[in-house]
Image (cartoon, rainbow, N blue to C red):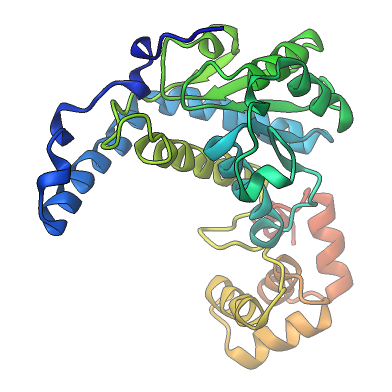
Amino acid sequence: MSIDLSKLLTERRNANSTHIDTLSTEEMLAVINREDQQVPHAITPYLPQIAQVVDKVAAALQNGGRLIYIGAGTSGRLGILDASECPPTFGTRPEQVVGLIAGGHKAILSAVERVEDNKTQGADDLKAISFSAQDVLVGLAASGRTPYVIGAMEYAKSLNACVAIVSCNPHGEMAQLADIAITPAVGPEVVTGSTRLKAGTAQKLVLNMITTGAMIRIGKVYSNLMVDVEATNAKLIERQVSIVMEATDCDRPTAQAALDACSRHCKTAIVMVMAGLSADDAKRLLSQHHGFIRQALQQA
């Protein structure tokens, strides 16, 4: 099967960088920097679509569903990166946000030949994790045409699951198949076809918004504090203390005592301090309000 790369926006040559190999190092970097500045502006028109995905993901997570990213190469790795950072940042269970990549675990660290062309494998990888209509699938591919991702999308749609994409080719096959298409047109890359550059940056920015937005919607952020952060190292243990102090305007000993009393659960410690409750009463109140601190405090 031949592919006409000239039709893919991400494969075209960039007129602004045709002489980049003749420039000084600083001039070269200036070209790259100017091109990178286009990325956020390309995403802005797609904020409504990103918002739709955020709300779909939040609803899925609140109802026992999952967010599943699936992609190949750089796109797949970005999905895995975003998924892997959700448990320590937001206290999610590892199975709630999952990243799948063509070629499996080996492909995270090195290229695996031709796996992205296997359409059937995309569906098989979803079946292997018992993907269901409760879940949300987000397909990731700069080109918007990766067979592995398309196979997964077709399977997800056959189950009536919500299917979204993040791609940098607005007219790709994936965009036609998706329920929600996020397709910022960042233009040709500085190095032709190297979609780890602007296209990769665009995908990373969008994924940041999807998970951060969804976690805010389900109560894992209070004010702008990550109140479900897990204390997995010394820095995060200290961050928990700072979060409780910032949220409640209490002193360090008070924050530390509250955290010690509730097995270092920031939300519980915050409600304890602000409402003058015991750890058990604060936990019970939070549970009644599905983990939302503001609602819990209103009823304290």
